[in-house]
Image (cartoon, rainbow, N blue to C red; front, side, top):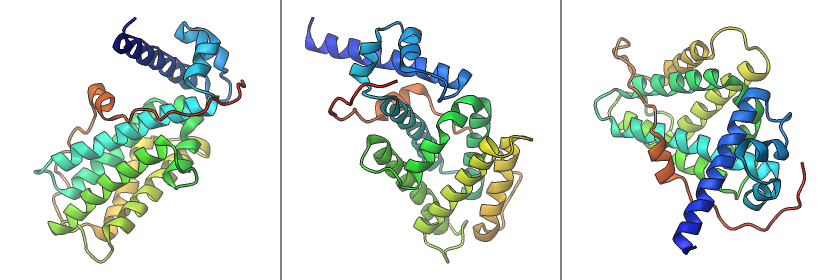
Length: 237
């Protein structure tokens, strides 16, 4: 088999494993699923799963890379939108996060704590952490552009604004996932967006329609970093 074909087959196999894990984590939660079950769902041997992912944590990190790649794609679409005001783009980001997480509640309840660890810098050095840094850089650019346009107040720098955005969004999601799932997360995220904008947004047209920031799968595939070589970890369930 030619090297290019071999690499393509390996990538396709890796994708099937990730898709299988996503389906299982979403339907049953992260803790209840074993690597053996992931292998069965993907139609591969258990050893094959460990050839790609040395541990369950490594598999989760790969999934989180995809989540953060999607988030970066949303921010890229927001930056590409030159017509919509920054406050409306902020509202759209909160709205899209809320609706997406609400739709896949089971999956996010299983892995969101791991996402937050990366978001707040508790786990560094991995590819997911680097994906988080790229997303944060896009968020800072979006908020800085809003300040340059006079749509956001300039008293606080874009880096601090981005951290505040992250903290408010993650806190709202975490509370809904683990403490109080009553009501709509999408509606809560809408209220959180107004809390964020209440201090920094200039007066504007609140009737402006929210743009669609959904990201095509092809964009994620093109922009997801190539996994770095890693030492094989000890196998475990």
